[in-house]
Length: 483
Image (tube, rainbow, N blue to C red; front, top):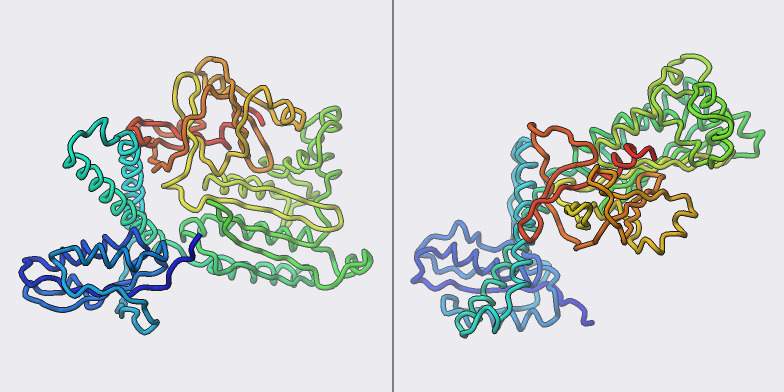
């Protein structure tokens, strides 16, 4: 595989006879997009006058292939409406000047722009499906037909690149660094540690990771609660840490990073860890579990009790705990964002909470499956494995329950030869389906106020073949099935 070429400087002059040189200039810039990202044009094409005879140049960033220089030269050189075409390696000084000014824009309008761009990408995806079904010689006989088909393919490719750039631009206007949230966590930790007489060091990693402001706002209260829990319950008093052979101060670390299509937040402490014995005792006192059921449960399953409404191991009400609110609210807020929360705790070593929320809720990659004669879309970020039902014995042995997806939705119980294993926080469920049809990029739309909330359904989308499909909410379905 050849290495990509360096940046290229694409120079051209538009013929004087054209009535609208700016339109021709935009056409030239669009034709460069399949080769790489275009970083501006100098002078500004949109500001050129009809009688202008200026020379323009554009900078092509990270060309897709080392042959791009020759290919662009041949492509533009053959255009009779362009003159003085040159394609040269670019220097850093060639970067077009881009004057900037700040304007206030309502976030709702930016969200609408991103939604429209996502819808455009989905529409181009449907066009891709149509183009794949068309073949020269079968649907088209003459050379003009074949040329028309190739022109349509080229237009589709350019339109898709433009739509993706539009979506990325809109998303870039909506995101802010995670440090906006993380910087607000230091004071609650510092104040609580001082109040309790503890020594706590708070560290942040990945503060430059970006996420939408609205999502960070939703995560602020859960994050404050988790770091206060770590400082108040997790980190031991100084004398207890020294007695246990631990160093001072205790540490709480919050890290953020991108993993696939998810924004991930880790909250770690090196404290005493969660006491599964105390959690178990409290669960029995509240009538949540019998001693026989508790004996068969793993530590990970016992930890799930802390997310139940009203659950607390505190003996009295204080400013920190015992009010019956907290972890259930944290989990509900994360699920509202279509995210998950996982808990790992080791006695005497500390606890880690991992929050995962989707980067973009408007455009997702999904697996289209068939259940009960109907088609459904499963977000790819939640899928752990796909296989035959006959090969699923090993997963059953690991304690992964299997359900008929059609049966779970009340659509009967047809044979389900395939199984899709879905990860829901720390849990796993397997869904029997009749067929796995395709992976597609889908623009999710809400069901609307007339339908309201439909259990286990997060929205609807349009497939590449033009058919509507419902998008499954795996987390809510697992809760409905009692997992």
